[in-house]
Length: 330
Image (cartoon, rainbow, N blue to C red; front, side):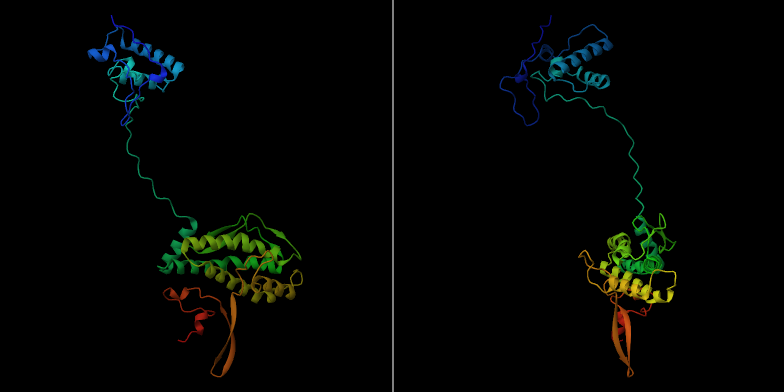
């Protein structure tokens, strides 16, 4: 009859792995490992699994050693794996014949290879730039970004600037959205509501949302998507603002709070000052510059853009009428 195997105390447990030295006094081999045979119990496999499961759960609660998977399915899988390799002592990692520390058997799951995920669609702004580049046949992303900004600002800014300058009405630009056409050009500004009227409000309250809520994030995103210089994009926006104020005096009406004096004050605050009241730089400063040009004995003053919009690099587009490159010798 097989002698019972004495359980070793916790400090004497020998758990060896690759590259680890054996303990000073390895535990004795059990009867099953010496003889190479497994003692028979005369019980059915189902009953053996039940008994082994109870033993493992008891020792898990006792000293925390053994199978760490206490669910019946995992514990049963451990038993099926180790029952036919060594005895219970080997199963607990206490037999000197154990080649490596015990680890719970992981069931192998046969899974079919996952299908490759479809590429993510580009962001709306990147998609709009792609459509614009395809429409103009542009291969330079900087030119595409600048031309997109030129057309977009010409469509979106006149209404916002005219509302703030003539009616002293501020639109909710923080939650605004931009809709593009099939060619990628920005054509519509979608607003959550109609905004509010700020009669006789200072310019920084009426134009602050235009600079901070609409232009600043749009210029930042457009520069990151196209590689165009933010300074160039702000110059495109400033040219549109200057054009609005050039035509604004002709739109004055008796019922509007704006006057020629307030329009001049607003234009000076937007385009003549280098810094804003909070100390930040004014990105719309001096978008247009006056140049005195003498040709054929006649001197004229030309208001030209501060920076070229690069549209001339597209096929079929000449220089703009306010392009500073007109001053260069032909």
